[in-house]
Amino acid sequence: MNERGKDAEARAAKFLESQGLQIVERNYRGRYGEIDLIARDGKTLVFVEVRARASNAFGGAAASITAAKRSKLTRTALQYLATLGRTPPCRFDAVLMRNGATGAEPVEWIRDAFSA
Image 1: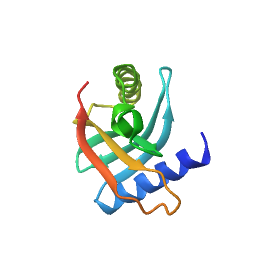
Image 2 (image 1 turned 135 degrees about the vertical axis):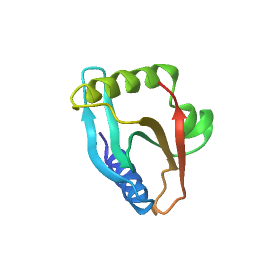
Image 3 (image 1 turned 90 degrees about the horizontal axis):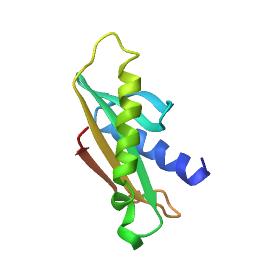
């Protein structure tokens, strides 16, 4: 992962923590892919995809979460859930931001961005 991606994930984690979520995993790698962040929001387990783009060209960050990417995230989340003793309530969120020089750009947090 490049430095810009690492920075975006660190900013997303910090943002989510400021909103009351607890980060439990970073960069979980499974057989089907990677989940950027896994967090707890109360009793709900949240799988978070972080997307940062330099511009909104080609649809921006949100458009980059394609059906294929959602499928990989879902399969990887199921693999993670299989490691737990029981399955908690879950959701998939997205944290979107524009990359810039300052790192202070607004974050867009989409709860329940898609369903499995």
